Length: 302
Length: 318
Ligand SMILES: Cc1ncc(C[n+]2csc(CCOP(=O)(O)OP(=O)(O)O)c2C)c(N)n1
Image 1 (cartoon, rainbow over the protein chains, first blue to last red):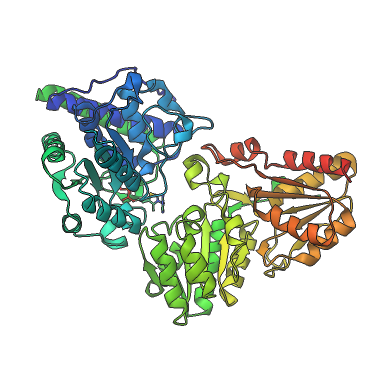
Image 2: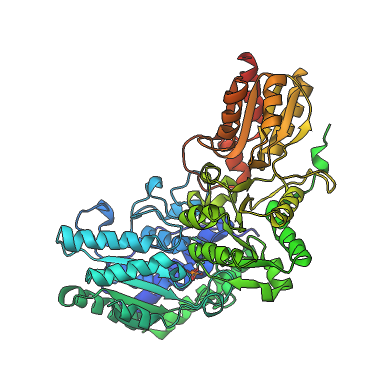
């Protein structure tokens, strides 16, 4: 029987959630990622799945302030996806937050879709703050927003941005780090998705960017290293950043240790899944694994 | 008559990857620099064969381009390849000053070019690099049309002295040139003779132009001259001026912005030497979109039907 894909119209609130609820939210996001990439027949599974837990907390844990009903709300915090290729997790998250109908996730990467292969401002998808896809540029755009809010308009708006760990091999990224430290952009939260995977292999083999923490420290950042799949650690890092935004004069860098493809056994920690979609058989296997996990979460009663 | 069903489809990037390996076998000075997508642009073939002459630079196109210059100025022949969007633009300043101004013997492969990179969308669909690169003094710019030609172009690039940019694609395209067809940098190939109009193309639109010409002949008895302008710089003035004189009307076709592209380069030659009516097939001043390659080719009007219709239009102005 052909694999049938549909998207429930369930949405999640941006409030405090139990660990069990966060697990369920990220499971739903992972399911959306698999579904939309399976339908698209191309795209980036690995990084998207690996960031699901962080997206769940950032968007549904009362961290990022936004209003899907009036998404261009002037006082909103900003989220800039610098690693544009992991758009599928951003799209899934925005849909589940109510920015646009979840069924639109089925149009990923198709002609005339608002869900372009990489986020596109000119596609007019609610929640997309900038186009991205040329690595290393989004983080500087985030800086420009943070400078506007903190130094020009003097509002308390926060700016969050995600870069890959391969992405930070780009030189301009370090120009951004220098400027963030120089301008004391304490309202900037730079999340590095440290899965040690990029296209050609392990980051430490393709071009080592280690030690990451020391580099950011030397540019005047508060650096917090966390397990990017542990909801408590993710929450606490974001809360520390929010505190720092008020009291400190340093930007924050969260180095999130993650696994590429997290949640799907045959994709986990394998760089070959950087830019591959699941085929039908793999999608079935993935849904089974996610279903089993769902049962486990229920029985654990966290 | 060409029987399209007998034509195999092979990606041009395969020709690039294999060409660099052939060069590596012939010349120990050939070096390859990787930009994290060596599998995509197929320099991974060289990496496997000559690991000592391969260096991974990471996702750092500016650095890779200028490292290549340093190696070239030290006697090596470095190839750096990435997606065309990042191998022509992220490093644009480096290409201008360090590569072209130094006249350094650096070879750049711009892969996954044009809209046919497909679902990745506009950010990855480079449609402007011909316009930029052909303004750089000392630069040689080649846009080959199929697998065989890309391989020959790559080898020729490695065997000439001076900076070369080769633009190629991701998807499998008709492999219609033969192993023993002549390829010379700067010398356009006439693929089909005719005097009613000339169709000048480069890259994957060469095949579509051939098919359009076949349709014109079969349906209406119109004989179009089809010219494969694989080298955009230095441009083959002789073939272009002869086409203008003999045919009196020209259609150009390219997977690139119309503004400043191959068609503009042809127009510069035509207007200065023998003005005739021209029509330009290409992307008309807009960014690309996600979609499947074939879908995009017809949506953006780069297919044989668009070329066919342009030919009929231009004949009315002759
Ligand atoms: C400037 C630029 N160069 C190259 C690419 C091609 N590219 C897309 S994703 C990627 C690897 C990114 O690695 P990382 O940031 O670690 O992301 P992950 O593999 O973890 O998803 C590359 C090289 C690009 N998009 N932009």
